[in-house]
Length: 424
Image 1 (cartoon, rainbow, N blue to C red):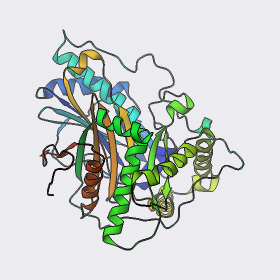
Image 2: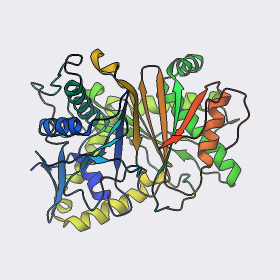
Image 3: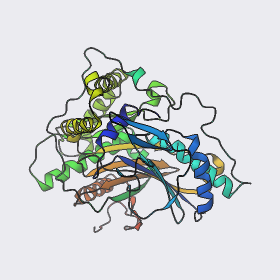
Image 4: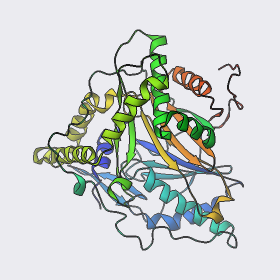
């Protein structure tokens, strides 16, 4: 058995019947999935990823990760987004492999890994599947064999306290008017041209993540103006992959969040908020700031009194603390970046998708991934309104970014070009 890393500990303590922090990666192939070959591929790949192909078991004081070496059965995807790994079955499997028509999807519990580790597993699974399906065209690639330090918990060695470096203190910031809808998540994905988006980033001299974060800030701002006279600041969490910053290769969780906060939106356009947004993100992504944040998180979890608390009290304490800190941001943006595959695999892969479950007591979450010349932004919504989606669409059209909108299970809009009228 293994102990979860510090991000895994937080996700473990936060889960309950209504909420569990899952995410989903899926690959759309050009031919219908052969389920027998997929099961064979899953059986072979699972033991190669002992801390991802695993289950989470509770003890009196802690959760433990136990590798599952065999017995993971693939399942048909029943259109219940991010619902295959639940609070009730996570002690059996914290990962599920799903199939539907020509799509292979894997849903992961965030307590085991982040998107980088999950995509490595997904790439290995798809490679093994395609190799057995097309043995003369696709070469077998043992992605994780002979790689060192890939199961290392990297947080402890990078937690360093720096005097004069202060973390963002979150107060009573804007939160979506929210009512939990038990029927499940509604996810809308916007497919856009990477080339078109890069043209806009050059115009505003920003990165893709900064551009998308700014667009989401403005969508929330205009939604707030329309619905209520609320003057609170808006805060958003943006995921940061720590591997490039600290030169690590682990497949366990190794990411944190920066939390930009915008108070003054000026005239409600990108030019008015991007300079402040870029300044905050740059500072919070600095090595000293991140080392301080890791140190603070590790210090709490290593506290002797906290360690001796029974598991049920730890969960209650962490969930209460989250309402005061992370629960005050309105949503999270996680940009995976560019998904790449070996050249002999790309001719069989049409699309790649990345979805996030909503966080504890929040209505929305946002995941982004790019493949070839297509960027796919997915909004997960478990509330009872869709105003943010409309505002996001208006922002994209104003910037001259055409998109194709799809909902899980089928298209609900065709290509929308800048300036065209459309109805929701």
